[in-house]
Length: 574
Ligand code: DGT
Ligand code: CA
Ligand code: ZN
Image (cartoon, rainbow, N blue to C red):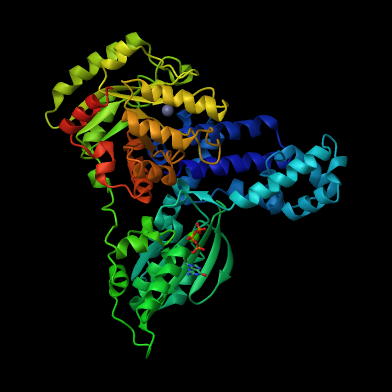
């Protein structure tokens, strides 16, 4: 989905317009459109193809036109024009927490600040405090903001980078000189954010591939262009690197450029201990330099006496020890997932009917899907009253007569209220197949209160799963503070599953926490939290997180066939 990418562009247009001192209404319109596209539960390309762009809240004629243009051609001349009119460094200044366009403009006018470097210097020389509306405190805050920006700015969420990378790879694949294309780097390992897109191509004529690469439609400027390596900055600000190798070098190069660095270092050490050396060019004998035959990536591992290590596990080198000792997990795969246990319908804030969501789930080969609409407290999400939920149970009973190879499970995503009590009473919850309990309010509670709140919910015998357990929204909202160790201890005791929410702006639990959970015997459940039929497709992101957490099918609740899941959900009723 290109939703995040488009939202990002519209947000940047708003920043640019503000820096150009344009009409505030226009600026607000772009921000509003960016926000609703970011939260849009459907794939924006589907909406565009159906001619429904104009029906998105806050998307008027002008914005509709520009978004269509971008989707159709990959460019937006209006946006390009704006970028030409503003010093590029100023856009970075805007992104410093606590600065924003108004302050950036004042800093530019009064101190000539045109980029981060200028801004940092102006703070250190105490000139910023003399700008109207700012003071000594602002200088300290801005400096801290620059630090934070430098640490995180360079990273792009996986959900935004994947569609971009796939599109570039597909474009390269059409070139006659290209034999093979792969996405490598942190993107292939499935890290939740990436610094750049690493592409690898096998071709006998690298120059022609480089030529085409630097001209791809998404490219803003070329930062390096060589025979075997080129780097470009894309219009969305992300960097993309391409390496071109000879076909016989491709498997070793793919392994090398997939990384991680630590994994590569550990592989090289192992190779040396076996009298071999491994590099991006291949595997060779230390004595004599003879090249070992390698025809695919698995051969790279095989020559070192290792089983194939999936990319998601190639991080700190411990995966190599596990491979040597035959302890590699049999990782969960998308095909192991038998159903989705956190899905919304148009009864609350989803866009599609229960029937449509169920048909889509069935089409994906699932055995079951749980409809888990919001509970009444969540007014903005049109949470259900107990009466409406009763009606929904009736509707689901009726719909379930349609299939004998598939079933809709009744459920809800019940709010965990501020004191840890639940938004529906136990009698109602006891009649549902699946109860997901989540925190959506009072996000600023302290760690102790929040931890107790979630623990109390886990002690409710009807709660099966804790939804998006840390509440983070990538790039927008930090996780609320919780004592994860205690949550995991209690989850292990109560048998409550913790969700891996695969919605790309959440990915919550994250990989590290999910791995801790597994190590402590806690069950995970990989869900999409879909608000539309398209949203069910986010399962792949959730599975990537699960794989990075070393999970096997037996660690994942929704890998169970229905009879066992039913048993398990009952057993969970403590
Ligand atoms: P990122 O880009 O920060 O999200 O993470 P990576 O892992 O994609 O890092 P990147 O793009 O710098 O390099 C891609 C892979 O290439 C990296 O995972 C391992 C390999 N690589 C690059 N430079 C070196 C190096 O100096 N030493 C070793 N051993 N491997 C390297
Ligand atoms: Ca990379
Ligand atoms: Zn939720």
